[in-house]
Length: 88
Image (cartoon, rainbow, N blue to C red):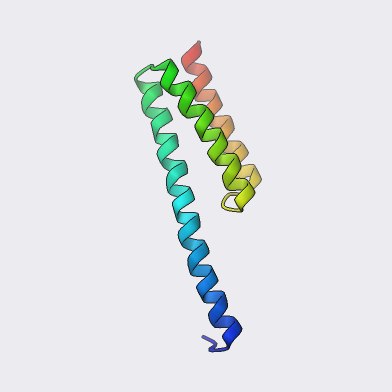
């Protein structure tokens, strides 16, 4: 491992970014689990509210560079299918 000042700074930045990304991913997973539990309970109001929140969080993660655009799109699509299955 290099001991150049630029390499040491890069390590510090990577550590901060890794912790921030971990926090965003945790928030995403928690929100998705809330949707799954509300779908299992057949709670339409809770499902819709959590679904809107999940879409906003996923889009925010894309803008911040935590998730790839297509990954977020795929997750939103799968959540939409599950929420729509509850409606019918």
